[in-house]
Length: 403
Image (cartoon, rainbow, N blue to C red):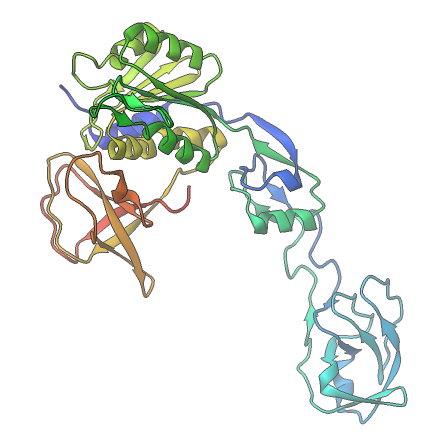
């Protein structure tokens, strides 16, 4: 079996044409977690006028040398202050209020004494104290939030401040997920013999894809029957942008998925990549839809879903990358198990701003050990040309804490 290199497979994946222009408008209050389909640009300066950042008295800084300064009155937040301060005059001004004309400094309440309509300065402040200048937060024309950004609490707050009632977001890609195999039992189904195993892949991947911003259709399981698999795949592609299956892609007598994919009219982009786990992965395309057939073992299907499905979802959402990769230093020696590009579950610690990798409590075994991905794990990448690596070697690591 001829295998593509990992790098070539990723380049080919990146070259696939994906429709990333689909969008919809949603209310700001419903946009949390969605992906922006437009740049958010400031129409005005923030603030638009010099603004008090504390409660105090708006003054002319040079007047702080005076014994007494006359209070002209109050300036509550939200009022349109039109008075102009002259020498040895001040206006009591509150947090968020427009600074009165002529004033260049705000002296906070606790720095003065008040008597008979006048203030006496107890402790001086520097020029411009507690005054937000025009455009301190942002200036008109600034791109505040870039297209492709996942909307979080800060983005919600900034857009609310801009009076962004409706938000243009990327349409969620629709991903159908199915597990194949006659030995697979779905949740809640009673086992009839000890050779049967509980379905987990379709639930793992559905959660992974939802985290990445997709709309997931859970199709459950289908047995090792060619006609049943074909009918399920054809039905799924009526509504799905991406169909993801697990199992049936190896070389066994009952591995029918690899045969079904071409028969439903999908063109195989490639089958077989020099990676561990997941070398039997199959990527196919039918018009503007994609089929990704992943291996059946839990760790293997999850890793290949991260490497090959998440980038497609990210492209459909208009995002630049599906996950974050960092350079990290090995805290212990690492023994490489094959001549393939390996993706090894690991722990990542940050010490003094530097990433370190260790393998504490990570089991060495088959590609079925999904528990290796618990406890905030990451994926360490070692290339085809890498040998065993000593502690202190720098490696690339895919972080799994934020898709």
